[in-house]
Length: 305
Image 1 (tube, one colour):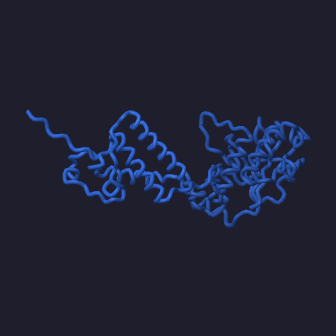
Image 2 (image 1 turned 90 degrees about the horizontal axis):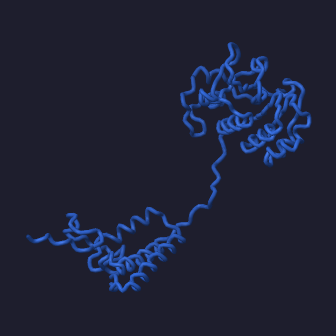
Image 3 (image 1 turned 60 degrees about the horizontal axis):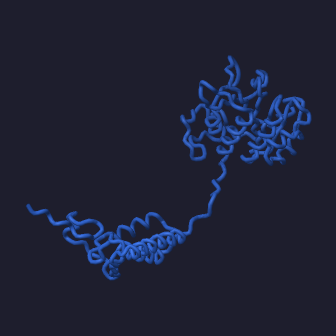
């Protein structure tokens, strides 16, 4: 849908550049300035710096003398005015209005609206507009009443009632974001590649390494391993380990065994056929009753009087 952002009587060149940047990151490029303070505002150094690379938006932007010229071809006009008025178009939040404008849906790009779209509001728009214009007034005074009266709606961004002051470029960014979301939005681009998971053989090999290391430090009794290794197997399955993480865990197991050897801890070899995570070790009756430690160490005998 054709979308245009119109800045009226803008006084700060930096805001023009920042507005261009806000538009570009949301995929919009039609910017029109109505009688800005500086005739060369699109070429001023501050404008270019604040655009942060949105030079194509500035290059294609137009400067016009009247609002009529800026509105050429637009069929739905949205004022951005937070100052209360005793007359004029209805005041609505951007998301509520956009949802009604594009079909009365109660959802906005998977974001639940704060309140359901009013059926009467949705009925106001029999068809989608061909072109939507967002109008922003000057930084100091906002939009003039006669300009607001020409619009179909006055958009009010919900803010803290005690402090609703928004920078011009910030307001452009918020409106541009909500409008882009209403149109379908952009997919989230992953900052990192999809993780590569370790295969079952790598996990089993790492568990075997850990089984021996735990036996080396005396934490696991190879003669009575109980369910320690199957439980660790389940823990690592939930962690969805990558091959690199498997290498780290093997390094930890190797360091444990080395420290145990240096400390002179008696070495006990784990029995793969009985104690491996896939060995099917049966639980003892005492374990089923919760009487033995999870490490497989025998339960302590009750003290004799």
